[in-house]
Image 1 (spheres, one colour):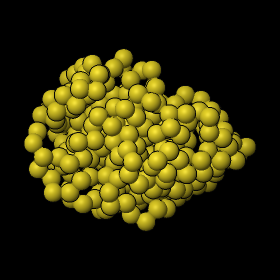
Image 2 (tube, rainbow, N blue to C red):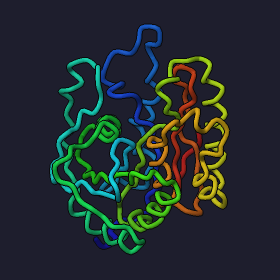
Image 3 (cartoon, rainbow, N blue to C red):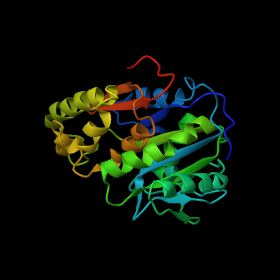
Image 4 (tube, one colour):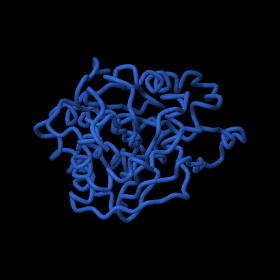
Amino acid sequence: MAPSASHRQPTLFIPHGGGPCFFMDPPPQAPHLWDAMAAYLRGLLDGLPERPKAILMVSGHWETPGPTLNIAPNPGLLFDYYGFPEHTYRLTYPAPGAPWLAGRVTDLLTAAGETVATEADRGWDHGVFIPMMLIRPQADIPILQMSLTADLDPARHLAIGRALAPLRDEGVLIIGSGMSYHNLREFFAPRAAEAAEAFDTWLTRAAQLPDTRDTALAHWAEGPSARACHPREEHLIPMMVAAGAAEGEPGHRTFNDHIFAKAISGFQFGDRVPTSA
């Protein structure tokens, strides 16, 4: 795919909430629980230099041995959440896939030493379609979903991001979709708030220092309360792809809120970074 965009796109690491949280009634004790995150996602494209030609999305809900691309022209939806209201299993998001982008992504990753696979039967998981229903309800931007690698190696995912950086000059927006805090066992426990705050402060500092960011993120588990916030890191690793694709460029926290007293943040890397949250 030849470059066609006139401006370089930034890269993003976004929180995608809990299951279909934006499309169901919030708990009575917290009626505005997800409002700030929903507003953030709805305004996500407003600060971009131009509307993306396509979105390359990496979700914390798909792992394969090596990078795998969903090449379906019109992917279905994978309702990979459980115990939610019946209507949340009838949500739709009919955006087109981007199989035409898969060749370019494969070339970039192959040059970086990765072996790339393709998949045409799996639907988009809720780490893709739930936030995209807010980000672009018109469902008119093609999406290519790429898996995480099952080793969840942060350095490997930073390198994958670096390999994909040329896409930013070709009209492609790279989004990592996960959560900066993801300990479901402790999510409703007030005692975990201090650990979440400590890790969020560290993660924000790491994101803002481009000269040391890759080293810090590669060793994220050494951050304060890191494993208390991510007993398993699949929801944090999409951040590595986004950060790697903007190596050496500024990073800013663009979203911050507290969900059940746990600090949750979103980040933007690269050009045209708006005022941080």
